[in-house]
Amino acid sequence: MALVGRLAGAILAETEGQFFLVGNPKEPCDFVAVGFESPGVIDAMERPFIRLSPLRPVQIPQPYVTMNVEGEVLVRLLVDRFVIQRNGSVSDRLWRLVTDPKQENRAVPGGTIDARWLGEIPAEIWQIVRETVLKCT
Image 1 (cartoon, one colour):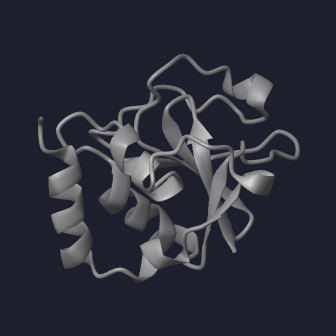
Image 2: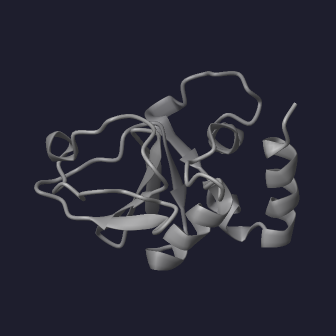
């Protein structure tokens, strides 16, 4: 089961014992303090995800979502589901749609959200949802 959370405004995914950063961080991040080797320059416009090398055991920050999709397939799915193509950032609105669909801003018991459905929803349907959520109001 893959774990997916947020780190510095980007997405941090743990899958099959590997860690990936999806999208551009929106705030400074001391990767070494978090437990990873410094990844150097991050440019999600060039590479929408990067593999992170842990220096010690790392835990995904809560709240996080669980998904059945694993490996690089998961990471590419996260790019398609959450990354804004024009700037390489993760959409906070799309993330909240998955983590707080009723927009109640309540803490999730145990910090875990079952998001297996996100890997099962057809890309064409998600694209409609994505366009609606990202539409300027």
